[in-house]
Image (tube, rainbow, N blue to C red):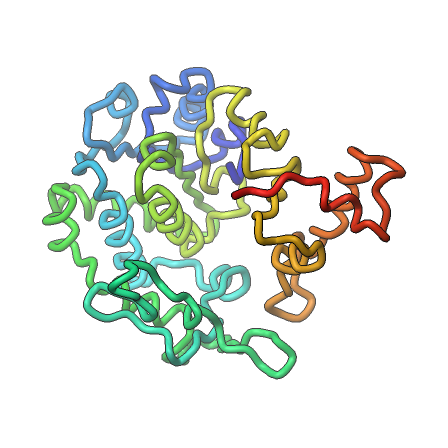
Length: 320
């Protein structure tokens, strides 16, 4: 979650997709009812089933299971074509003005770098243009044809209301009604939160669904705002706690990752996971990855972990 449960009470609009919060998270759903009662918030539910969440919604729309990306893509197209985005936010806090490499493209349903035999992508071209210092080239006016904003507009132009309705099964008038309600939250004094759960996270294309919804929220300026954000509803302490404590088999505590079996060199492991800033003076939290890792190894191995032995890096198990 980008926000917390209690913060949901600050929302002006609540969108539930990929979940059934009223039934699956009844205690947390209290804050949706608080938003409705005290903040005059409206609740939209988009779901293949008419759920208990839908039963208390201000507006419900059906959708074919698995077609959420088309629905959200249509919302993005609506926001861009109707100019219902928060321009100052988009320019200041997103990569909309970043220029993308000239060899990146999209044609006939495929991005550049697709290997038909291996059925996988070579993502070398999926990158920004960099200057001599390694920083991203930008266009603050958002007019450059290769900036993220214009590539995004071109990509999502295919998601017309007619296409969305055909793919998702959602009637056009209902889809457009939801677009209008969402678009109101592009105003600086209004904010929407998106609540989702296992209906997205456990889907085969779940990451892409969540990324698409995040793009909606970034265009609206709703990330980093009270009552906004992208909020995954994880109902039990053993789920969230498992992640925070690093008990997943591929993670270390603190959201660091175990090395793979080919990563025998400590410095290579660290450099791969320590991103360079894309812009001058950019906040770069994960630039601290080396410090986090040393702190963990010292906590585990104490004085045995030294700079000379790469902080006992060789003692870590490696994923095969």
